[in-house]
Figure 1 (tube, rainbow over the protein chains, first blue to last red):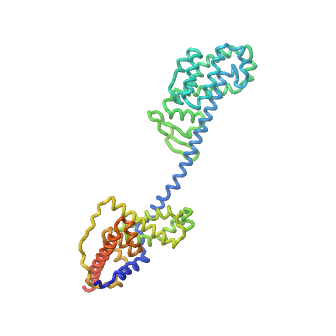
Figure 2 (cartoon, rainbow over the protein chains, first blue to last red):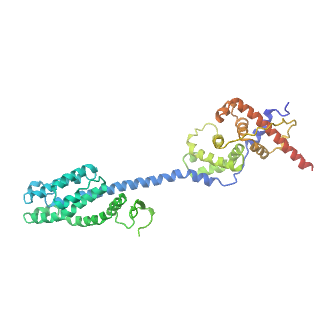
Figure 3 (cartoon, helix red, strand yellow):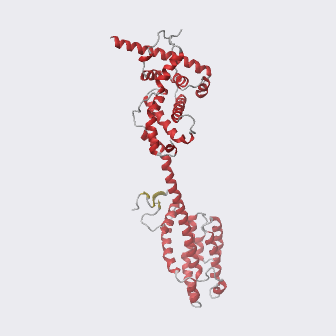
Length: 250
Length: 177
């Protein structure tokens, strides 16, 4: 007994709302825009991050390359530059020097790859190497960090030996030395000093990264830097061209 | 529309400006108040721009946006249903005995009475009467039985009629004195 059939009643609503328009009271567009914006913005940091990652890898590569170049020269160039047949130079050198040289070369090749073989090699080395070196070398912690210390610490005492070897070699065959590496020796030594300074400060991964970056990036604002004063090394600054964050180092 | 598909911000804004008021009217029907409606509108447009590539050109573009809005409104209703304990007021409403003067009722009035409905009634009424869903579809979408959809619809109609009569009475009252 309804005076208005449902159909008509429904039609009333349908008609009323068919072309209904109500203007939003707030400006919602800015909200909508900011909601759909982040997706685009998020892409850029990923580019930067990957760029930073690539740079880091390259930087590490350069460092390793430098160390590979530095160490053999310091330790062995006087004795035998890799390419040369050791036999030629071996003769003027003491036997101990020769035995020392070979395992060290191996370690250096292994250094960037993994920690364990290095430590095992290091142990084998210790047996052959002179005493002062021995104590420092028995570091078994398999961190890259410590490897670096080991490798560089190797250099320290080696210098003394180097001096000895130098004397030994220079007399019989100055020519071979000069032919081997006349120019790079100068370059190596300051780099090495630098290392020793830095190593004193190495306590964590942040320090390692800082060390690497310091080596590669000579700018005041490094392209990545960690604050390592406190125990957890926190990222303190990044500087990749136009993309810069972080506090300046005091 | 092509610009929107390509993610052109200017074109997206243009689309929003051209359709927002119509879509707000849709959202208003599903919401309790303007605030809620505008929230749904905002969510709906975000979905529109995210899903615009899925629009295959079937039917009108405006119709597609409208569907996105309706779906957003339904979704938001279902979310609220889960998070809030909605107590449906099941008062007995008398069937109205008098007819209506349709011409006197504006869209705003109808909007008001629809918004006054309990959430469940409002959903069913909107979906069936305005959007043209079947009771079966409504049941599936809202997770109720087909019969429940039917009974809620007739209940919703009854409530709306009563409210309209009240409004008309008020209207006469103001006109007459």
